[in-house]
Image: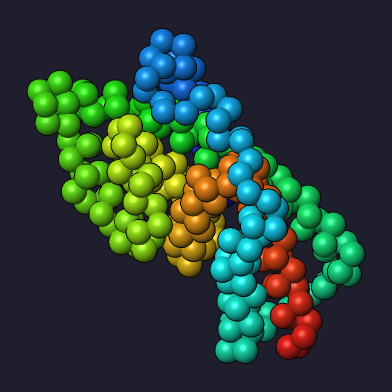
Length: 238
């Protein structure tokens, strides 16, 4: 059993490694040989817009969300306390490290590398699936199903990106990158799976409006708040 689980993890890591390498390769090919495919310069998303206070104010809804959730769950009987409750200092130190890693790694990966790589990948895939004949199946599904669905669920806040004036592939790449981000949180169960999907789109909105550094900071703080809220709600309501 243990050997099988370890083998499965290794296979997943290898698969993930080659997936990321594939996106990096596509991104590189696009920037070198097909400059018009990606409507951004290589580091354009790193340009910061607005002040840090505006970033944080814009992120208030997702900062409050984990606090509300933890209070709700604890007040409704979910008061599971770890056998060896760590001290706050040791807990917070680990929470900071995990949050910093997630904020940097996940934002650079999903909202930059995979996002850019998916723009080129989807265009190429669409060309192969009847795009050469003037009816690209991937484009059709994006424009008639996935795009409208995400536009509705995001209350129209991502409309200009879902139906990007440069190409439909920009919006489709955002949805694809976010689906990959969501799938990376399957270990959190069905609720974490769905929650990460919505949080991912919120972080895309932050990035488009304020730059990738803003998304990194917001993601980092969101995770810190998640860990802190979980710790304090157990302590307060125990």
